[in-house]
Image 1 (cartoon, rainbow, N blue to C red):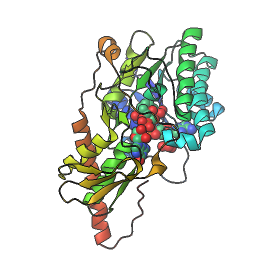
Image 2: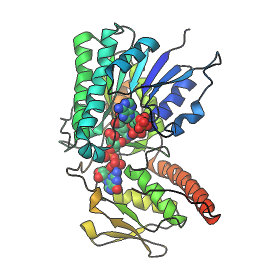
Image 3: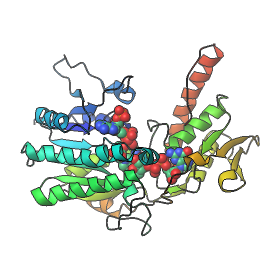
Image 4: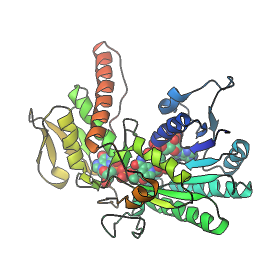
Length: 364
Ligand code: NDP
Ligand code: GDR
């Protein structure tokens, strides 16, 4: 059997790195698009690197950008992929309020560029497209829990850009018979999660406090509630969605909801602090370590968003029934893995600091 060829946009991101690993383990030839950067940006995929001069190489990186139509068109023409996973995006909700136009260009029009390239290149009967849709489409939620039929009401420039991407994917499927599917994924995390998303910010921040590198972790809205899964589980279902007999859209979630405040508590328990004692309210709320009464959490209103998605909770009944998929890794296990990883990183940094090396680190 000839091996399948996959193209992943956003390969340098959290999901791209896990999906690349997963597809290589399935025997795929994997191509990834990475952006030119003035510093190294391949840390998450360095372990996947293969020498392209060797005949058995199955992992290839190409420079590109979702805002560049000709680049996308030329790459798809050259690679002739069987499957495209469009994971590339300006994916930070808070940043989308600062850079709304760029977010729309990469996240909304970027998706159109992929679909249009497949159409122009007459690859509709060959190439399947997975679109990384999001629970942020539900935004100001209209029903709890959210399913494939819950009305969308995005609450950020990111959510609105992803709404366009969702519908243009459906539109190319219905207009041209393209195999184009949306995975409406709820939040998923891992030790590879970007450091400014709240879960990683918490596990990294608390681990650094534990190792004596920092004293306080500043957070925004502690009452926000999310349905958090593990990225490793979630990339498997991205693949399953494209292996299904027909293109379709699926909600992917764990069905469990916790608040940011509870996530902090669970992480502190994993660190052996016994939990957090909360005092005060709103912008004046603080959190103290249960074991030492030291203040470790403060609220900083800089991290509040102009418009907030207060709570999300998904129902993955359809994915379970049709794809046989369920999330396997519990929130406790996820937090344990993230804390372990961040503790190791903090311990290394602490050692270097003690030995007199100067290190730059930011806790934004
Ligand atoms: P990350 O932010 O970790 O990764 C995003 C990737 O997109 C990076 O490789 C980034 O490159 C790349 N990228 C950003 N802008 C462009 C551009 N203009 N052209 C090409 N590539 C670009 O996100 P995740 O891995 O967490 O998420 C993957 C996808 O899934 C995203 O589309 C996200 O919006 C969506 N999603 C994520 C969820 C989650 O909880 N993680 C939930 C639902 C949807 P670089 O490394 O150079 O910045
Ligand atoms: P989200 O993830 O916006 O859901 O988008 P994020 O982790 O950024 O925020 C989750 C919730 O935590 C609250 N919060 C904070 N968030 C950040 N980043 N920093 C803080 O200090 C902080 N304090 C509280 C937020 O207000 C929010 O309510 C993620 C991204 O991966 C998207 O790309 C993806 O589509 C959605 O998940 C599903």
